[in-house]
Amino acid sequence: MSERSWQLMMSGHGLEHVPVEVRLDMERLLDLMPSITHLTLEVGDHRIHVTRDWPSSRMEEADHVLRRIARSGGISAVVVPGDADEPPRRVVAGREAGCHVLG
Image (tube, rainbow, N blue to C red; front, top):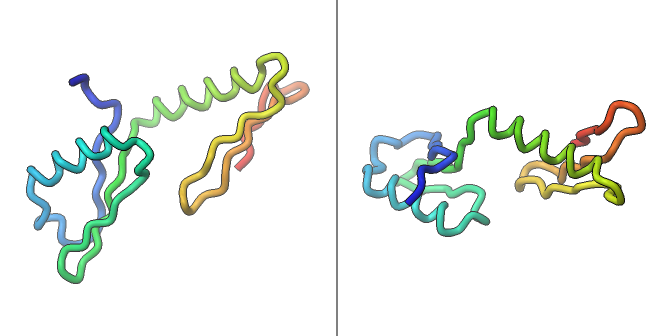
């Protein structure tokens, strides 16, 4: 299998109760089902938030690609769905500045 471009990020109380094997299984699950944006593990009374974390350079490259698509002839906007807590992002070609990323 190729190396991942992201790493598993977990936050919350009770992290010490999540064994390495479970962490590896969560990575595999997120590989198999890219539509899963996050998981919540319930460990006793604790909740652990699990998600993918990408390096900032990857996000910068994604923004660059979105701007390039929005500047393409005939494209008026690119709408990227937001996460559960965020509205969709709309990227439109600008008249002078090239492109605007609207949250």
